[in-house]
Length: 229
Image (cartoon, rainbow, N blue to C red; front, side):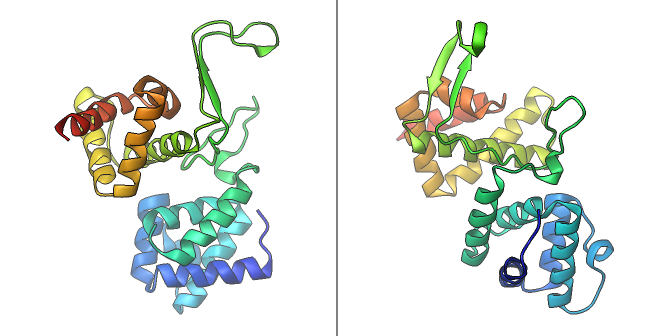
């Protein structure tokens, strides 16, 4: 993704505002993208390090991954949030470098999905001539923006937790689900959105939209909250 001079300047200022010292920037890059800051940007002042980081990410094609990782690491920083919304929304119609198409035309993503679930329709079954679904259940989420946003957020949260926590055995899946539930419970806005989505769309439709086996355990935990209330 090519960046204009103005975009590089705004991005640099947002990063410095969100990560005011090298240590915090270094941890974000290591935890979220498994990259070494010194190997990418070297030393010098924070301004020079951030400039070199952005320049390298843009040149190598993973600048969208960098922006998304920074926003996940510091979601409350308003300047970074505005930058992330601008870049990731504009970049959702492009193919990020971390999702390079292979020779068979299938996308492979190592970090974050940039798909927008707004106006999405999901179905389970099989397709007939022309791709028309002729079996299974069809879920239309296009009329419920809260539902699609909640499903996308939970999908991203689970993927993020799976990057740093094993989730192969049933016990490991329960642990990841519990961590996801804790994050949801600590975020009143997200908690209300998820509960509202489950009520409006139903738990089976929500599970289908999130498309992650761990969501089964997570939904059970959330239902326990509702029963307790």
